[in-house]
Every structure is written in structure tokens, then in C-alpha cells.
Image 1 (cartoon, one colour):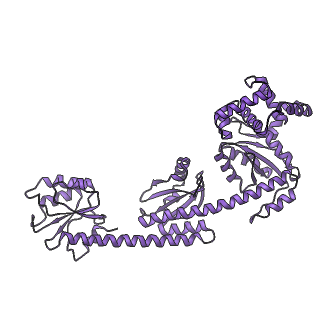
Image 2 (cartoon, helix red, strand yellow; image 1 turned 180 degrees about the vertical axis):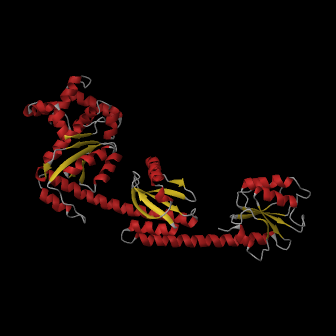
Image 3 (cartoon, one colour; image 1 turned 90 degrees about the vertical axis):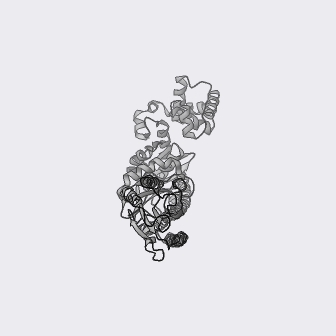
Length: 484
């Protein structure tokens, strides 16, 4: 940054300080004007040079002149002497003192063009140095990105560059990693609230929070789709251009790392999909062998509980991220299926349901009987609704009247009632009953238009020979789905 103090230190210009309100004021350019009111033609940050050609005899007018320059954001007035004025006018000096405007004298021997050229050279040198520093910082961050534990290395390097604090947070605002000291670590709750506010805008939204002497910059991390996480960064002082460029570079590099993690996650999910398929086929030993392909494989417990979930795509993705480290996770026919140790099932179900999903929790089964656990979780899911988002098999068995019906008769009835329907229609009917006939909620859950829901329900009613406006038809459908 080229400051007024820097310019005054140039002996070849021989500028003389008359009044320094702020010697550290930044000078962004030089303007020369003999207008009585040059303010409309200025952008702020200028050193305004004038000989006062139109100001001969001014006294009270200087107050208004300086006031307009203050409003325009001028950094300093340079009054040329030896032409119109032999020395800086006393009224101008007093106005600058009252209004806090920097004032310097430009002696007759110093040409205005010499001042302009020298400041242009200083600005050019400053821009070149800033570019060099920014490039050096980007190189340091790029080198950090190829080290082991790339995310931590990038955060550590950025914290040094800022001489401050940086941290990453989940899309829910939970602190994931942190380095350094500063506002970014003292304002985690505020940052989390800001993340929740901008999260619906995806990768297009960033934010800042004002701190005492700095700001906390918040940026989404990711290259496509939804943000993988968020970066919060703050310097001990307000960041300069090079530091802001470093933050942008770190965001890009963290996005690349997140994309690599996402690719690895997709590969891991393919492995887990196959493992679940083998479990349901009664091959737990082979399923374990498939899981052992992962670098950090997990041992399947002897007993498990299945969780089956439906809901909006974003909520299911959040649920999958939550469950990834706690059990086997897979997508099956539009549902999220989780195989968890029995003691973890209930808290995990509640945590994921809070994000907007419906969850069915199956009975505790040995690994060799995984199919039964999967099916009981499906039956429990069928009874979950917006008023009771988590339904466990034990609760269903203690409360559901279907337990009083002969199983063989119930299954025969289900085969007859649901026989004319295909898989898509059965899935739609289950959602329709779960949401008490709300076509809007069915559309949201299945990701289709309300008119499509209406058309499907009409086709189902035609196939089963009745209207679901009739409570008896709804009860029949419910019993059929439960028995099935």
C-alpha cells in the first residue's frame, strides 16, 4: 500500500507536510484540478494537486471546498505555492485541521507531473510486489495440498499467511478442524449460524462477519453439487490483497481435496452396496471380504439393526454422511439403508430423522439373518410419519393391530389387493398412506410433480377398484402393505 508517509519520504519531491491528520492514509492515484469543486470528478483515495488558480481571495470558501473533498474520500490536498499563493492559505490550513484533511505544500520547484510520475512508479512497484507475494503464497498453498493430510497442511499454511486463525466446519456448522488463533475460533457459533443461513444457496454464497479489528471470511468448499464443508478464516488485522488472494486459492485447493474425497466416498459406497446385497442374500462372510477391500475396513458386528430411511435428497445425503463412520450404508430403491450395531441404532435414527427423514428401525438380528432385519425395518418405516418420524419394530409390534390378524390370511389378502400394482405403484401407495393422503408431501418425498402423484393415485384406485376417499379402502390398503 502506498501511503502519504511513503510519498513524503521521497526527498526528490520535496513535499512539505502542513497538516497530517492521517499519515498512513492510502494514496491510490494523483489528480490535478483547478476547479472550484473537483469532487464530482474524483473516486476517492487521490492526492489532489492544485495551485488554487480560481481561489484567489478565498477565505470562508475553503471550508466548503475541503468539506466536499472529505465527502469524496480524497486522501490529501497538495497546494502548489509560488504561483497563485506564495504560501498555503491560512483559511485552507484551518479548514483542513477542522475537517481532518491531510494537507501538504508542493513547492514551485516541484512539477506536478513529477509528483504524478513518481507516485505512478510507486504504485506500479507496489502492484508488482503484491503480485509476487500473491504468487508465492499460492505456491506455498499448492505445495501444502500435495502433502499427506492435505486439508490440515493447507489450513496450517493459510493460518501462517494470515497470521490468524482458520477452521473448517460441516454444512451443519460443526467444527471439523482448526489451526491458529483469532476471531475465526472465538466466533464458531456465529459462523455456524451464518453457514446455516447461506447453505441453501450452495456453492454460490459466501459471507463475512465483522470482528473487532478484522473480519471472518466464510466460503463454501467444493467444485460441484452441494458444499462439502465451509472454510472460515480471519487475520489479526484486516487482510491485504495478497492475503485475500491466498484465501481464494485455499478455497480452490480445498475444493479439489474435497472432490478427491468425494470420489473415494463414491468408490466406498459401491463397495458397501455390494456388501449389503451379499448380506441380504445370506452371505455375511463374503460381505465382510468385500468390505475388507477398503483401506480402513470395518468389522461387521455379530448382531445388527437395520435402519431404512426415506425423505428429500438433501436430507438423505446428510444422513449418509452422518452414518458413514458408524455403520454399513447403502442406497436401495430410493431408500437409504444403514446396518448399525444395536446400541447405536436408536441415537443414529433420531439424529438423521431431525434432518427431515422418516426412519424405520428393524428388530435386532444376528448377521446371518440380515434379511429379517431388513424386512422388519421396512415394515416399521411404513408406519413412520411426520408426527412420528422414527418407528422401531418393537413399537410397531406393541401398537399395531395387524399383530392380531392371522399371518397367512393377511398375506393372502395382501397378494390379492396389491396384485394388480407394479413396484412403483406400491411405493407411491405406501407414501400416500404415510402422509395421510397429502399429494404435496408425497411429491416432495418421491421427487415428482403433484400432478404425477394425482395421476398415479387415480391409476392405483382404478386397479384396486375403489377410492381412497373411502376410509375402508385406506384401511385395506394399509393392512395389505403391512402384511406384504
